[in-house]
Image (tube, rainbow, N blue to C red; front, top):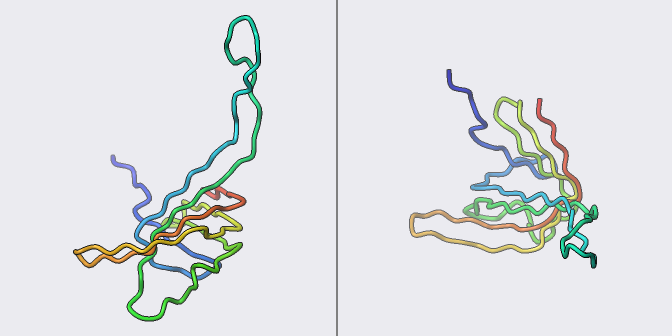
Length: 125
């Protein structure tokens, strides 16, 4: 019997839902090798670093006035969840760094946002 997967996501920023075309996140542990001089010439030590959360999201450009000034988004809360509510991830203190617009001959318009979040919460049930 086939198992169900998360079919689509719901993007909400500060409690308001927005139409989006895609979402991507990169979680970095910050761990790194520490090079030292030794007889083997190999790395023997590691160091813990600072976790970072990079986010890219493509929101649909509305025909008319955009409800959000995306350039001014600071300390936002982004939640991604499944329709059933069994899958949920939340990024807190999201800040937009860059915005780019893209237009397609097929009529697809997007506003691509890139930024970072300060914290990540996995709320899977």
